[in-house]
Image (cartoon, rainbow, N blue to C red):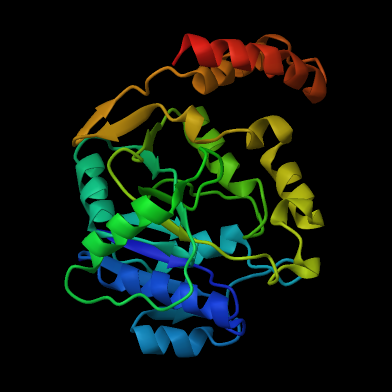
Length: 301
């Protein structure tokens, strides 16, 4: 039985660059030990890619009125078709290496209820990756020299036990808000939110937004507003990796080191709890004034 089921809803394979990076990503997943891969949706070229890469394809995912796959349906289909005890929803442009599986194994032995996530490395990719012997070491070296560690906002994968997230609002994939809600939900339920950035390199292959309506980033679309509504409002979608309760370092779980960003985040949550009756923008101005951010950056260097 595999340790973990990776599931994703790729974009159509009609754009040559999107097709390239998605094949790179899914191929990297198939080379990991103890995993199975499920691709969801009926986007153009997806069935052919699934056959080519030797992974499971399930086309009948439910969609929004605009035709965007629903997170709730993705979770249900993955849960119903998984042969493992742990699930991982992941974006189809993310490259994984064996350190990912090692991190999952370590966390499984340390916590029963958890969600695992990390920052990603952004990297420009223009050609197929050669998955020959030693590819992991070559990729890691190239990304460290040419890529950039993304700020701790936005999450491209979540690992969690099969029993978690039994009820998911009908968020739309590829729009803002739902990933922040995942962290909010875990914190609210008292699960460990584990940041494995110090132990794992997760690689995002950069791309433009030509696949989205109008070529606009996802946070400018109406479905993002619906995601925010379903999440319960702006306060619930402000959760990021800064809200992790633990970090995975050297096979052990430690409390994250206090930084200026984490201090400001804790202050914001405190203020929101105390002044819950105030409008969002008022709390925002109190919790995130630029002069305080600069002052605490110096303090926590």
